[in-house]
Length: 229
Image (cartoon, rainbow, N blue to C red):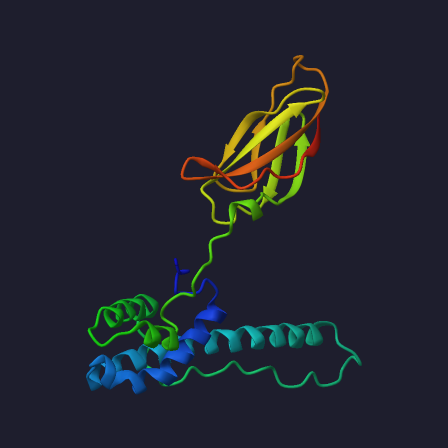
């Protein structure tokens, strides 16, 4: 069964992964065959990530407080009274910081999973393998279009691609048959529709279906009314 990529997209989730890895890597030193220098090196990478994340996060909070303090100095009341001391920005700790910490951590992760003593259960416990992804059955899949906007004869749609390669969009004028009008590889996306009679208003519907490996996948979306003018 396929797995989702192990490195999270958000820094908050990355922090959780790093903290978990830091807490557990020492316990797997013997099983993985790591030497003390290797554990010390990856521990320093984790400390650097956590330290930099926390310093920036605290500085952001302090900056918000600084803005409030500034506004109090400018416009606060009662006029003439003390505004109080300004917020103090956090002091970054004594951790050694290097450029490219994330890339170094990723490289060390790849080194770990190639070791003879590595097992999937170790990787799951350390958080360095992604969770299994269950494929969605075709009969349960259909594009969920969030919005359809028209501007003259141009139509713009938004919605999730759900990881599929593309989305084919079809249009049917009132009383007519559906025919392809666009092939989108990402959304939001826009496309033009040629009316049956040039420069004349026209109503109709659009629908979409996902494409996976050059073939239709799943069901058509609901029909969405459009007015071209």
